[in-house]
Structures are given as structure tokens and as C-alpha cells.
Length: 148
Image (cartoon, rainbow, N blue to C red; front, side):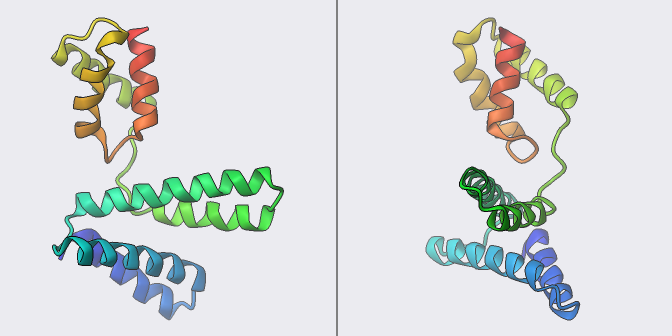
């Protein structure tokens, strides 16, 4: 069993003991999403696979929160933001802007990119290397800034 999955199960037990229903429900939802993918693909997921599921869930929560905010539903907005924060706690530490820039400079040199026309090459390598520590949107924006 992956380390991340063990941590989720342990945190679920703790949340149940502490009667933290919000965290319990959030972790339980995540565990069921992981279980569903495992059943569908008929394999045990690695930490990297689980991180992708968590990132997708965080994105969904943030998008929902934005829509609730626009609709004036503060109660639902707060709930989505709180869930996203709990889910983010299971993701690896994200790179700072400076660290991301440094990594992208290495990748740009590595692929020999000189202009925005080379974005495809950069993004291909960068998303593989940095997927768990930086959002694709941030990678793209930073790469454009460095090339432009």
C-alpha cells in the first residue's frame, strides 16, 4: 500500500476519533475516489497516481468555490475552500516562484528553447518533471515570462 494512502487512512481514523466530521467526510470522499480508480483500472495506485487524483479534486473545489462566490453563496464558497485546503495538505510542498523559475531555466537550456514557438517542448518536459510540485498553469505562465 502506498505511503500516501496509509496517511489518508490514519488521518481518517484520527478525524473519526476527534469527531471532526468535516475532515472525516473530505478524507472519506477522497478515499472513495481513489478506490473507484483502483477498481476501474484493476491495480493498486502509486503515490504519484494518488497525487494526480488529489490535484484534480483541488481544482474542482477551487472552480466550484469561484462559481459559488460569483453566485453570492458564501456558505458553499467557504465549504469548498475549506475542503480544498484539507486536500492540499496531502500534496507535496509546491515550488516557490523563484524555485519554479530556476527549474524552468534548466529545462529551457536542456531542450534548447529560444522563443515562444518552443513552448510545446518545454511544457512536455516540465509537466513530467514538475507535475507534483507545480500547477500546469503556473508552469506555463512562468515559461512564457522567461521566453517572452
